[in-house]
Amino acid sequence: MERGNEPHYNGRALSYATGINTHGILTSNGLDPSCGDELFMADYGTTHLPRDMDHFPRDSKDLFELRERSGKPWVSDEPLGIADYDQQGSGARTTDRSAVASHFGLAMMFGAGATIHSTFGLEGRVPYASEPISQALAETITRIWQCVPVEAQLGAYRAPHLSGFPVDCPGASCSELEHAYATVLDDRAWLVVPRPVIGWTPVGVDGWQVDSSCDDLPIWELTR
Image 1 (tube, rainbow, N blue to C red):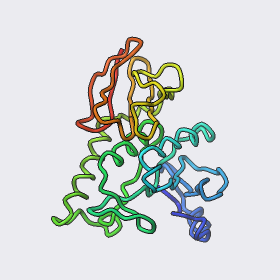
Image 2: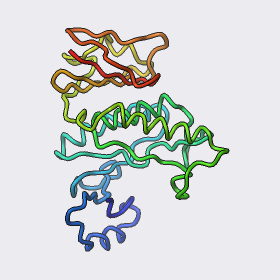
Image 3: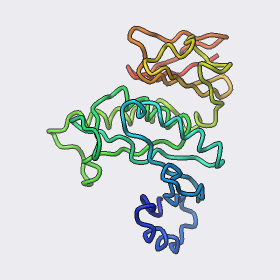
Image 4: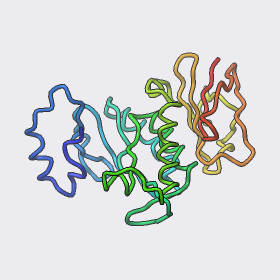
């Protein structure tokens, strides 16, 4: 439960909500360090990350840094919305399935996931028949939640510039954004490559083998 959404805009909402007994309920204050709020937390944190397409596919990796600073899990709250149209600025929305997949995959690897931000969600309904892309993207996110288990966030952070990265990707050359990420938990690893280079396929190194892919999404599980 989030006590108050965007309390930096409406501080009174949080002050009222703090009087509610949340015993036994996992709770976030809604305070967001990206808005200058103090890193004061309840059970977990929520943050609003940049929604532009230069950052959205990979910025949920920031949940890792927030977790390291606070010692608690974080959720990517209200990321770039999904829709049947693309829009920048206020009310930003995207139809880009690969970008959505990498953002939500990284959120599962390094945090407590991400919220689905959508018009149908804001209106408290399922997608209309006239919103097939919204429906498909929601199903894609559901699939990612199945591919990347909750224990993945307990793994060790790995990137191409660090030792222990499980696939061949020198200098993050496997990604058009020049960023790739993995988390290693014992003999299992999960890999997300935002905007993979066309034609690139992961090849394991140092005993790692690609065990499965998450459908056609830029997410893989490896074992050794």
